Image (cartoon, rainbow, N blue to C red; front, top):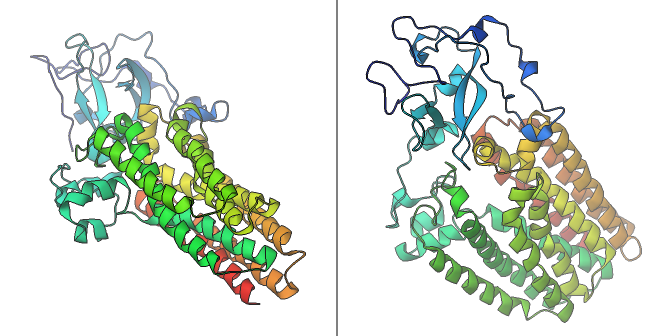
Length: 456
C-alpha cells in the first residue's frame, strides 16, 4: 500500500516538514544519525493520559532534507512527520514508525501554504485492521450496504426485520443484543437476591421479571439513540461507528429524537405498574443515562458513568419486590459497576487509536499496557462486592445450604472473568469484541446460582 500525495510540487514529492524533498539527493535529516531510545518518548509514568502515544519532539537545528518513504531501508526506525489534531487542524509534530506511516495517506488541508506543509491522516480501513477493508459505504436505503460494521453478520434485523424499520432498530442496537443483556442481568440479580432476602416469592415477581426484560430492551434502545444523537460528530470520524444510522444518513436527528421519545414512553408504561419507590428510582435513572454520552469528554473514567447507568436495574428490581431500597442492593449495584469497568474497558480498546486522534477519553487509553492489572482489580472488586451483597441478604433469612449455593455464584463468575483476562490481547480487535460479547454468559452465572438457592 503506497502513500497518496495530494497537491504535489511540479518537481518534487510532498513535504514531511517545512523542507522539500530533494529527488536528486534523497536522505533523512541528521536526527536519524543519533540513536533514539523509546524511553525518551514514553511519558506514561508521569502523564498517564498520554497513553501509548510517543512523546512530541521537533527537528531543531537541521537544514537537511527529508526523503521519500519509498527509500526507507529500516522500517523500525522512528522519525517525525506532521500530524494534525482534528479539533483545530493545526500541525503537530509527533514521532512515528514507518510501518505506521505506510498505513497513512498524505493529504493537504485548506489554509496551509503550498506546497511546504503536508499532513497525514489514517485511511478509513487501516484503523481497526482488515475487518473494515471489505465494507462498502453505508447507504440509507436499508440494504446490506447499510449494515453496521460491528454487528453480527447473521443478526435478525438485517435478515428478517421489515426494511423500513431497520435503520431505527439499528439505532436501538437491536442488531447487537449484547447491550440489552448487560443492562438486564443486573435487574434479574436484584430481583432474585430480593426474593432470597425476604423468602417471599410471589406471582407479581413474574411480572417484574418480564417487565425488566421489556424495559431493558426499550431503555437500552433509548439510551443508545441518545448516545448516537450526542456523538454524531464523533461517530463519523471513527471507522467502527461511522456506519451507524445517524452519521451514515439512514436516520435524521429529528427522526432519532422521535424514536427515542417513543421508546421512553412505552418503558414508562411498564414502570408505572411497579410500586412508588421503584417508579421514583426509574425516573431518577434518566440522570446518569443523560450524562453518560458526555462523560468521555471530561473524564478518563467514562466507564464509571456507564456502570452507574447500566446497573441501575439492580436497585430498581430489588425495590420493586421489597418496596424499599436495602443495603444488599446497594452493594450488588457496586459489584455491577466493577463488572462494567471490566467488560467495557475490554470493549474500548477497539477504538484507542481513533479516540486519541479525536480527543475522546476512556479507561482503555488511560491504562494502556497496564490494562491487565486494572482488569484484575475490577475482577476482584466484582467478586468481593457481590459476595458481600449475598452475605448481607441471606445471613438472617436463608438456610446455610442456600447461602453456600448463592455464594458460589460470584465465585464461578470470577473464574469466567479470569478466563477472559487470560485471553485479552489489546491489539487484537476481533478477540476484544468476542470477549466483550461473552459477558452475557458471565452475568448469567450468578443468576443461575441465585435461582438455585431459592429452591434450596
